Length: 283
Image (cartoon, rainbow, N blue to C red; front, side, top):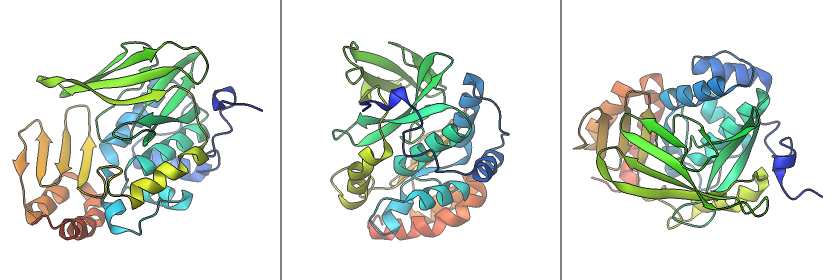
């Protein structure tokens, strides 16, 4: 019996998440066409997803408190509404698999042990770390190498190996990050670099939707999108349009901001933002 999915990337539980038709539909939505697996294509998928699909927890706040199933994940991504890590990372992992990439999910710890997941991609005899579902602009896949660095005009991050690989399940890494020119670096998450089956994340997924103390997503509002030049971020009653300064907003201003920066998907997000705002009594 295998103890690690790195030996067989077809045992992740996400192989049948997307049909080929849905894969093509999503790529068209973010402005791409199918192409053979390569580092360039992987980077394009990441960048175009960040620029098109919002990271948001409004659906978590306004829907029944249970983790989305496969159909709901696909529907939210194909509609352009996006979601948090529980929607974004499984979808992208399944998408990559359909496109022929060797991809799988990795368990990560943040404010709680094993409360997050990222993606590992094996490509051209190298392994890369990807995380589209964390709300920060990790626009480039990072090769799993000590002090491998990624850069954004307002943000930078790097991988740190925290324990040398003794066994396949003891290859420990951390993600260190900071907003450029503002503050000191801090560790965002840590993970063991081996792929896990989707079923291994079920308890973590459900806790995010049912326990307010488990993470920040049931006690505050998060909406953002990022591109190569900057980004648009709503966090509770503060917005940042980068380049630019953060400002305090009321609900009406936040709705105008959505409509200005999030295109057609703003019509879907607006009623969710209204409900979330009143639910959290942010006025």
